[in-house]
Image (cartoon, rainbow, N blue to C red; front, top):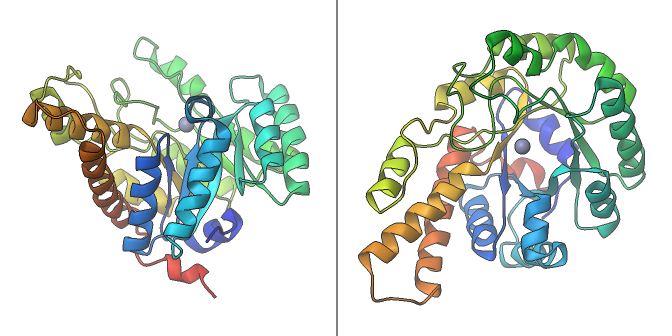
Length: 313
Ligand SMILES: [Zn+2]
């Protein structure tokens, strides 16, 4: 059953976080919906422009719609991840999304405001929730000095003005996490002082954490034992930092890298151990099962287990 993200975040604020999981394939959608029903946990199905390019936007929306029939107890919303204006407008008119992200964070503050505001006005006409981003998340690279890194973090003194001007519904912030399997190779961990200041300035306003994967060390080792060549410094967000971030108003935590690592591990081990096989259905079933088990654990970590019932009248 699709629910409005506004309702999800109103209920979870400060108590638990909604996992927003990037999906690219039928197997991932199956695994996610199965996990949501099993754990009785609400979730966001997240679709990136790259996913829409790969499977086709119509195909992905249809897969998600089908999953909601196969798993009628699943409580979820569909979200466009990292859309530009064109993607956002397309998602607004497609009818398949309850929520979109407009990402103009690479623009200067005033241009970010202008672009975000335009999309918010359009989205709100259709009762669609809008996440915006302030601060540069993916640009935090190893070779930057500490001062340069701080320049990329969300500046807490800008957040109230940004939200007031744009009327966005949630805010993705740059507080130390990054996309991919190599988070924190420079500065360590989530910058809680920044997160705390953002919460003080935006009380009860839903904050979004991108790059929330754990990058489990054992998974990385298993991939490498099965022929992978991931680097030793692959790291993610430690579980205790997730729990702490939720108290500071983080309502939505994005997960992509972990499910990609899982895909790689399942398939590498499968073909290593079953070299004569060539049927996609057999490892596919294993991946769906592993994906569901993985997400059930993730919902538990985010405190979302058994919370789906809060949204069913
Ligand atoms: Zn992101």
